[in-house]
Figure 1 (cartoon, rainbow, N blue to C red):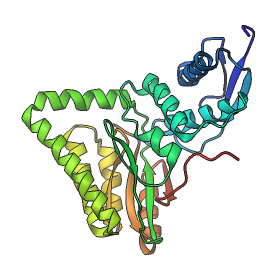
Figure 2: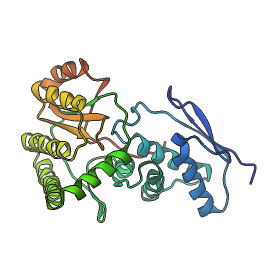
Figure 3: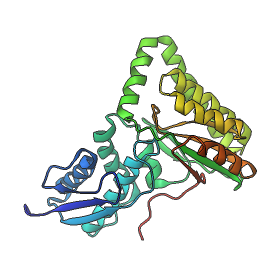
Figure 4: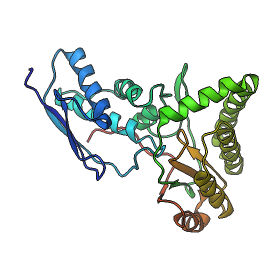
Length: 278
């Protein structure tokens, strides 16, 4: 079907509407075109479709908006073929699309977008769902610096600094891995205070690797001063957002403080669902 047209509509003040096949898509829609081509290779044909993606996530802010969009598009486009792809296949296709956007993505964003909840992820080991029973009063506060950044740029910067630091760079990576395992144990034990401290340590490591900015440091400092258990950069850094672990009785104070300097502030829970077919 050479005359097929696959169109994606992103209801966004930033992107608007774009045709992605057979016309060459704009850069922001290139990952959707790649997904369409992967479907074509698998099924031997390109199916015409018009897909609308709605999202309240800021773009380029370290919240995985590109992965979430890729997951949603992949699942929706599968329906055009009359199939509900399992989460494992959706995640893999979205991961392939993420490579176009980020160069060398970790695979975390597409995995969490598909499966939801809390996971332990390692590039060479896959993911493992974690049974986490944190008090319902514990929330995540997300503050957007308003600075868009490139994940690929941040990843390249970190890799270059790691190489430049030599053994010290390897040590920082080792500490980061150990920190993750300690955080998993804290999550399982619902040790919120330790988890917050580990977030602070992780932020320090990210700062040491060069991906923090004065604006991010201000947000992290304000969250901690207002009563958060801990706060850190989320995503690749060089802009984007920070997350803070906050108890219900301090939510208002933390949000108020962050709102004074952040572009946007959100509050969410930790165990949110992933991909769902309605």
